[in-house]
Image 1 (cartoon, one colour):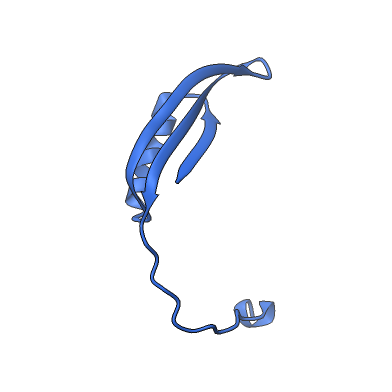
Image 2 (cartoon, helix red, strand yellow):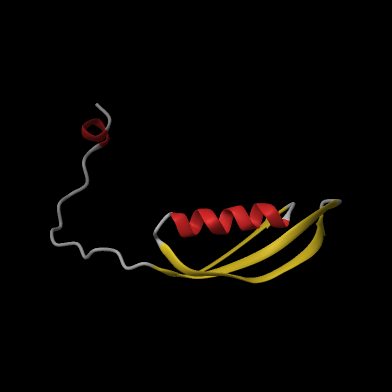
Length: 73
C-alpha cells in the first residue's frame, strides 16, 4: 500500500511511521520519497510511505450490519 501526504517537518513523518508500525496493521514501512515544496506560500514536506498490509481474517458469515439504532442505542 502507498500513503502520500504533506506535513511541515520530518519528525512528524517519523512519528506517523512509528504509529503505523505500532498499529499492527502494516509491516515493512518505508519512506519512499520526500521533498520540500511550497503550497499556498507555506514551505511543506511532501512524502510517500509504502508498506505491506497485514492480512485480515477471512469473513465466515454474511451477517447484516446493525442498524443505527442497534449500534447506538
